[in-house]
Image 1 (spheres, rainbow, N blue to C red):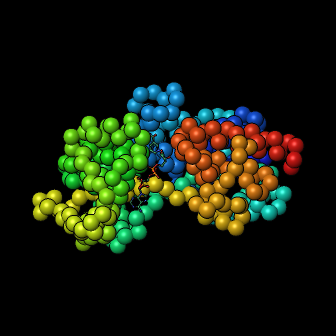
Image 2 (image 1 turned 90 degrees about the vertical axis):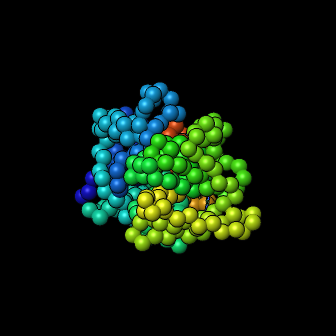
Image 3 (image 1 turned 120 degrees about the vertical axis):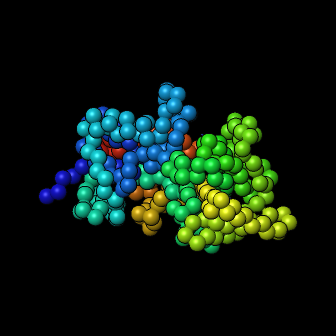
Length: 313
Ligand code: NAP
């Protein structure tokens, strides 16, 4: 007979790790699965300035490492195994990975969201060859090269500032004539001399033989096309696509109610449409996706799972 956990948590970002901490402290037998590496999106972030109490110069990986250690300290089992299937239709819920089936009385889904792609020609084939979705991971490859940042939200604007330390010049390409990013973040851009914003522009195509060498931009107001080419000396340049996220809901389609954007709706009890299954973090339909709101969800989901296991299971 397999072990029946009180709670299985899917996802090792701040939401999952906070849920693990609260479940562990509540003395629930708890197993957490992370498919790639702990931390989710925050592990890709160089600076975490807005998590209360985080020291100045806190990094995403640093914060997450301590979150994982804290959860383990309270008895949570952490496994680096990618979840491939779930079945929430029975009282004992099944969570499967390539290594086997696991069962729990309750499940907390905290799989987060993934970077959105532009869907233009050349993007896929040149990913990792000049096209990137993570400034922290790849910024240093573009030392003294021109860099194009696509997007106008908080991520694009914050990462443009980070990338300006590497690139000879950073050009933010935004499809409208005003940025979506918070005013405080925008101010940093306008105070950084080697950042320029190209308004009303979208990417039509990315080109290059092995490495990015060409970017075709279209002005959405005039329809004018502009081709950017790598200089002969540089040979290439960087394109960082930072245009938001799509919910990581592949496991859940047909199993939980999703909203029209694919997020999981839930109230303050974090309860999904399946009894004993809870959601936490960026995957939940909500207004503000931050580390602080992810950890908030994780704590609430764990407390709700505890109540379910004790009173309703
Ligand atoms: P976001 O707020 O959804 O912004 C996405 C940006 O990409 C928008 O400017 C959008 O343009 C643009 N865009 C979307 N699809 C596009 C396409 N196909 N082609 C060209 N441009 C496209 O995403 P985000 O900046 O990644 O932020 C996600 C969440 O994390 C937000 O809630 C944000 O506040 C939060 N966040 C906060 C911080 C912070 O507070 N320090 C840092 C990072 C992220 P439009 O503006 O025209 O829609």
